[in-house]
Image (cartoon, rainbow, N blue to C red; front, side, top):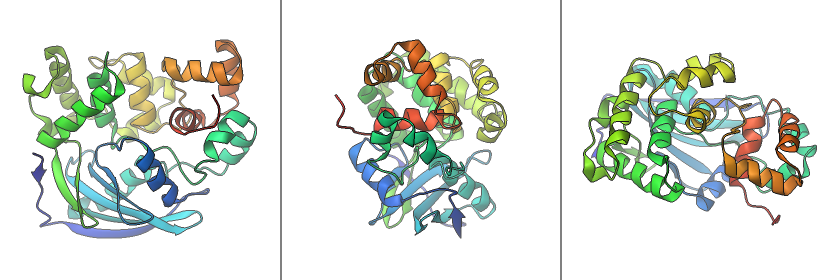
Length: 301
């Protein structure tokens, strides 16, 4: 069972965050009801998303309740260690892609009918990311040569047994463990020895700052990919996942995601060269376009 973290010596911080573009937390809640929820993400009451995560750099745990404040703003209520409040708010903004200026996204969407049909389902939604590049890297290692459902089950097993169970919005939310709390995993976790070793190496790398989201976002997407590719077990697919869905680079299109590329080929009736041209027109939101095509339902066959 996940450990229950006491809420003593914690401080509350409430902030209204401008979103720079349309946002509707109700669309986030509806999306989380359609798809498997990431570790540390849950729906609260109507129009509320609950988050539980390890704050990068200090690796102390925090919770957040996020609700709509206006057409282009949200209310973030954080509980964390007293010194972690501002960093926790910033991490919430990144997890829910609220740190990206989305005011140009409608023009990109309107120019691509395939993308427009996806976004129309939830126009107030933005990409929901992993809690941190550390968590994304672990998921990438676990999922290698496995189906997504299998990987999700194994990651949740790690969270249940090594992560904390935090009280948030009147509920308990289990989140992925920090690199300090992961520890060494044995065969009972259902992972191969090489994957367990790679997770240990990633934990050391995260503690050394080699998976820091701010550092990766300050680099170009290409530079960030090159940096994470130096880590054990991180190939092209995994690097794109860490940089795009961990650090939140909004313009990184995951070209190594074969199923996504084949879907775009089919829907646009083109080859890979044509897909590249389509995706190029999504700039500077190529990562967002990938999210909506990958995860949103459509009436297209």
